[in-house]
Length: 442
Ligand code: PLP
Image (cartoon, rainbow, N blue to C red; front, side, top):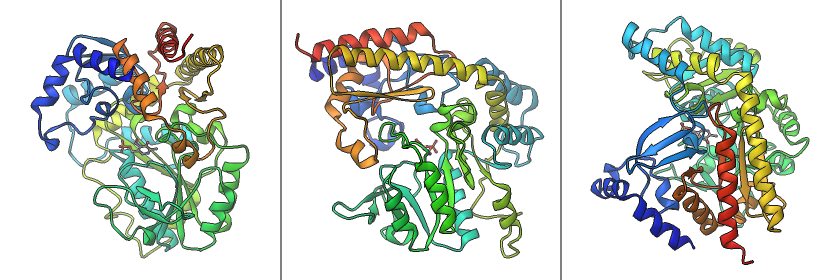
């Protein structure tokens, strides 16, 4: 079935295939060719993107449930963001001036009121927000290590791009291209939802910060068990370790992310992607207590802090986009709409699973839904990796892409935007049911 779908994909998309072939050296290609893993070894090439829909250069239209892996959770080119960007570029100018705009305070105030922490600074990406949060954590605690969860992803951050050495408990080794070899000097690792394992690692007394997503989202969605996140907060406080919550993907949990939805109390929040409405923007926020601790350190130069800034961080264009996205697009009302659609999506998938008596499950995190080829849903990253079925994933992605639906090209996740409609969701349910019918002999 997968081969049939892949052949159909290749036949449907000759221009995309040719575009990919003509850029024939790896480094001549766009970096995000993730789709070629799942479909027919080439990605679709983008022509246009509006709202919840995209078109490719072969002239097909898609309902986009991937939404740039959350980067376009606000929908593609929402009018308020487009207008804010146009105004900045055309009327005002000033894209790389290295002078702040007054709007930066408004952008910071939006983040503070959404996520609770008072002090915000800007980066261009979530990766940078994480890297700078790590540096601040090391500076303020004078400890060397960062603890992350197995199968996490926080961007191309060396400390977090690690995998657990097989057969060991919590011994990390490098997991990325060109990583430093001495990751045991920089990192510790624990399983999500495992407080005992976390405590074992924190007890060494050398962990500056736990960097974690409040729900794993990069090995499919793994939700926290009751009491787990409170336990992490309690343990980190007890062992003098800071808690950095990466809300980049979990912002979909609600207008104030998982932090507000679940009442979390981190020392630092990092975020990127969706807050810029498609324009590169990232940010990190500090608690008042942590900001005071940093400010009281006379040995740290907080005005000219090399290592936690970037030339284009907080540029006027990003800031204008953040203000428009948070002020006008990803509003409370928009989240109500997105969550209602996600519930509809979840119910549609659950109905197909139940009807076919499949040992699959469906998980929802606010506006994002995932179906998984395991029931019950896994509770750790390692469990999630163990039940991952790449061939089934590829079949469903390619089947759906051939019928005008784009899912996140790994782990079958779908995200709703303010522009997504019930018709879009129902289209998915119909095609999902048909894809499953092909799999299940009658
Ligand atoms: N944090 C999380 C949780 C992510 O999933 C990602 C990317 O997928 C990042 C950070 C890095 O984002 P970016 O690549 O936009 O810097």
